[in-house]
Length: 111
Image (cartoon, rainbow, N blue to C red; front, side, top):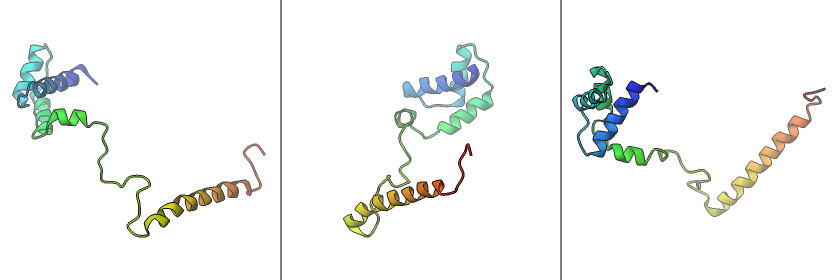
């Protein structure tokens, strides 16, 4: 990342940390104070991207998932506990069959 992009990002973080509204004018002012020549269009784009968002919350939830997809191993809608216990057994059986079928082809990598 170029130093100009970092300077704009750091300026936005400084503003968010101080609880000041992130605007393009304030980003340009901070980067100018740091002797970084930032074009106003980039400051404007960054300010618009962060408009209405809590930057501190964004930073604290960087590794958090979207939550739209169900968790791995989630229970199906119907079937109850018996279906949950049988699903892993079926998957293991299918995986074992696939592994065995690869060996039956009659040739190998070094043949």
